[in-house]
Image (cartoon, rainbow over all chains, first blue to last red; front, side, top):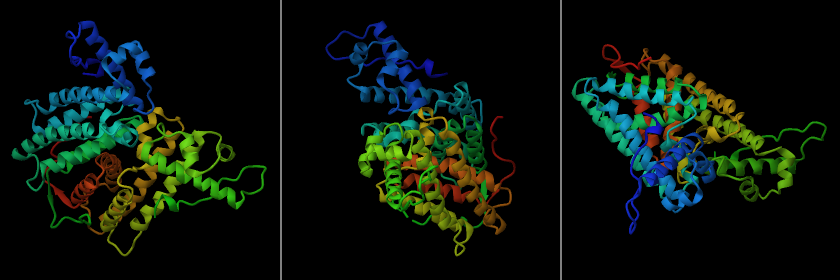
Length: 225
Length: 225
């Protein structure tokens, strides 16, 4: 599954007939072109013209769907979230694998996805999160909600792993899931910077290796509060 | 120590007299203003005019020091690297603390640094790393070298912690240091997105908690190669 497989319905406009099929196709071309440029270069560096040229859509058609670039950005976030949830759940819900093997399979699939594009495209959510200081403020809640959704999905599988004895009882699956997503966005950033898979592999391996361990006495050091 | 404390010499130009004191002050104002805007909004979203206005420096003076925005960006990376190394080593080289307490003190200081600016400013290196797809290609090596320098400094302290029994022998300090910096950049990104310290605290606490543990049997799951 790649960005080219992103499909979903264009929003219906009040007081108009339902969107015609060719309209839906135009909408999807815009979103797909947007995702390509936004994951590769970010929001601030990408002008609407670049997206319109890539999608072969005239400016007038763009404004049929989106009042402005910001509304387009939010639609791109929603599309990316849905696309990525499907990608993630194909592995996290794979009952043929033990829970932690599903996590490893997801990480490997995410790596393969980056490799297909020469590690030039990152995660839309991480890209926009990093740029947030220069973005429309209404993006913030969308980005946080997306990450929390992904974390909740991972936490469910980690809880299952703990129930089955793959993760030590002293761990908190929700904290682990948050740690994974915090670090994974950093790993995607670094993989894009280095143009290679090493940061993704190192982070996933270190994350998984810590799960079935026993603390020796007290925690060695805690953060000052 | 804050960005306002960044000081270092302007580069000397061949065939001219050594830079006069007022020139050095201008150079430093430019770099400081650049760091403020680049850490808050990123490279693509920040125009030279914004930096010149902030620094109260006319465009002509800018070109006395920098042939273009790209050269300015690289000088900002070098300044930030030096600034951050000093900040880091104040804690990592603090012999009055046990090695892992130094790491925790560094994380707390980095959090305090973000808190001072309402969690609006991230790490210049993480910001630019994320934007790399839209940046001058020559930034890439500078950014990677900076992260590798920071990792090496952390690895030395983690090695010391292992020698003193704070970290289990099965860990590899260099891998741990890389995992920390991969994840920490993700935590800074997330803290900026959420405008709060929770991601930094969670990541640091989870990272430190795993260090003095014993694996139960084999690693629970390894990454497919």
